[in-house]
Amino acid sequence: MLQPLDRRTLLRGAGAALAIPLLEAMAPARASTPTAPRRLVWIYAPNGVHMPEWTPTNEGELAALPPTLAALEPLRAQLLVISGLVHDKARPNGDGPGDHARAAATFLTGAQALKSEGPIRVGVSADQIAARARGALTRLRSLELGNEAGRLGGQCDSGYSCAYSNSISWSSPHTPLGKETDPRNVFDRLFRDGEAQLSEAEREARRAKRRSLLDLVREDARRLTAQLAPQDARKLDEYLTGVRELERRIEWTRTQSEGNTAQLERPKSAPEDFDAHARLMADLLALALEGDATRIVTWMLANEGSNRSYPAHGVAEGHHELSHHGKDAEKQRKIAAINRAHIAVLAHLLERLARAEGAESILASTRVAYGSAISDGDRHNHDELPILVAGGGPAWRSGRHVVLATPTPCANLWRTLLSEFGARTEQLGDSTGELAL
Image (cartoon, rainbow, N blue to C red; front, side, top):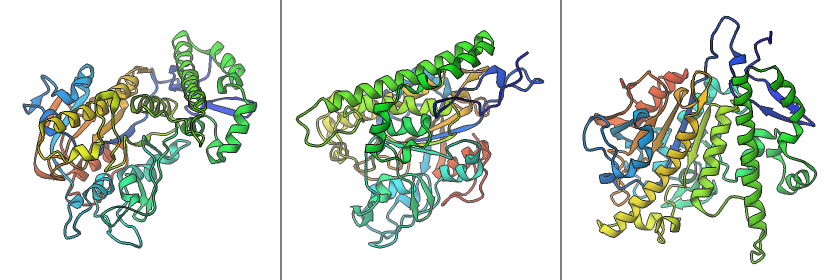
């Protein structure tokens, strides 16, 4: 009889190492199924949303989703849409303009960003509190992703450092964590340990000599598969197929980019198209959780104050430009289209996480929080925030629209998620307690 597998079992070969998903064979002999680890994901969308198409019409059961959230319909029973949350520390509070910088900086810290030409200061973010408590359980303490590059130095918004606009993850009050926007680099960090620290030239030299990651670990995979029950063997095959497909998609993107000889500089491998780029990142995020490379992820769909356009969704103008809509109906329509594009990416991720892991899905053990620290981009208000939480199992009764007493600090929600994750904290920014959801 096969001895139970260790949860951290790796496939190895020719210097490569690949984590594998949770299998029935990883259960202790006395248990019928392995226990899935808890996971936390935060996804940030910039510039607020068009609230009339975001907010459900009724409190209580989500009998129907509003237009912006329509792509989430297959997962409606897994959603908790929360109204009434506020980020007071994203308000000026005497500091004048700079709502976009403050919004991103405050989102997971609940703290007021220091407006200064010198040092930066805000607070430790919720994801990094989680990482301090449980990050040592995985190879990567946490994973920071983005779909728009941005520097962490200089000033980007009315005297605020670019670090505030371009990062939502802070390991200390003075230390923002840079996010990875290149899918190849994320893949290398997840599945090719040590390569993330190499220069691009060194990576290219390795790629020129190396076959597929799965080719390197094939013999180890074949040996393990022969020892597994059919259900586990099928799951392992599906996981490895997913890794190979991501390799193929990333390599295809790279060769397509390099084939454009009109460019003076070698393009990055990240697709220019938002949807293609975001779906790649979503699939990488899902594989990171499935392989237990990390249990804590932050993802910025774009930087706060982003002015990128979304031509595939009929929006040629910049997002930030449109967010100052002055109640113009056409601009509001286009903002809603951008909001739906972002939610479609969330839907893709959630559907990906909903596939089975043992007796339940990955989504059942993962809380995915999505939202912004700005409500209406024209007003730059930081109350009645657009926030939802998906997944996470039966601890809460999901499939609801919860309306909280205003004002309820958004940091209270983050403290609630942290407690459930096993990283209880008595202080997070301006929090006043935890929520009973």
